[in-house]
Length: 128
Figure 1 (cartoon, rainbow, N blue to C red):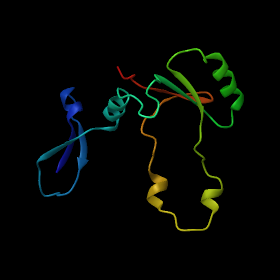
Figure 2: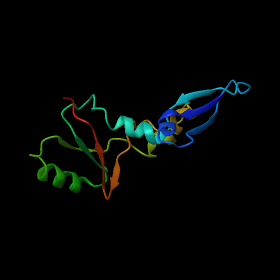
Figure 3: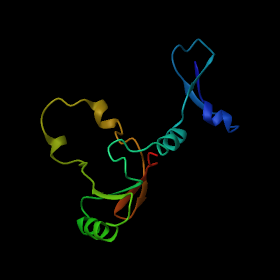
Figure 4: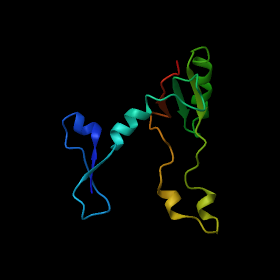
């Protein structure tokens, strides 16, 4: 089956995302491309922080930036500053034990933000 992004098709683009099984069936099936998925997710509110419009995620090595931003925008409604909790590399990879390779290859972050020096901005749509 041919996989096409229906949103791209609506915009007048080809929307071709490749093929999937069964390969002998030429009929199209619909999915959503990465660009439109990101666009869709940015319109949804954050389930864990419903009152947050903008989340500022500061890299863990730049705690002084976190302190500065937390003080500076403490009174701004809808903005929250957090320190990045994910660890890259480190002891987990050196530990002996069975680890699924698939888990390491998957990007678990649902929304991608705008990268700035020392931090990342993630926008949410507020619930009404």
